[in-house]
Image (cartoon, rainbow, N blue to C red; front, side, top):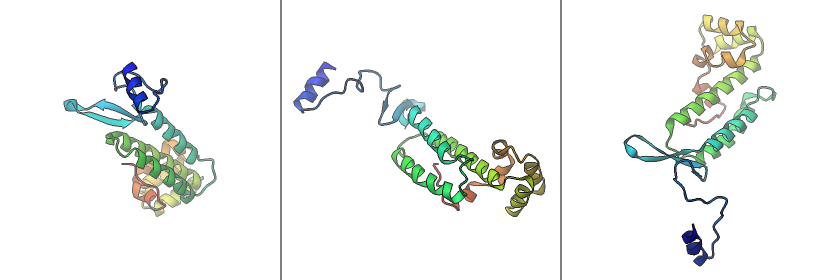
Length: 173
């Protein structure tokens, strides 16, 4: 550390002691990225844990089911945030993480859509319009108050990724 301080002093720079350390690169984060070792000993980079949790928290705020906003409003707000986040973290080499975040996001959007339809008969009618099997529409409508649980199972086949791309929700993966 003393060597670094001397080298940086020649360049008229200061070492920030609270952010700097002499340690293994694994377990540390740099500009919100962390490093990990893949098969074959290749070192890759991923999004650190804190930015991932911050992303999820922000998406939760934008996709609250109690907001009273239309799906296009939610999509517009999500779009600006997600495109900026995706642009910054595009160098992350973790496709599985991107897929999981995408699935989680679509799950939230499906729950919003089910809550917009509110009642069982409306859900049944709208799901049939979208091409759902009558048995699927009937089962979802029977549990009309369970938006989060319903939005992960049977509704996945009807409210697909393409359904949410129409209002403009981008993909992460």
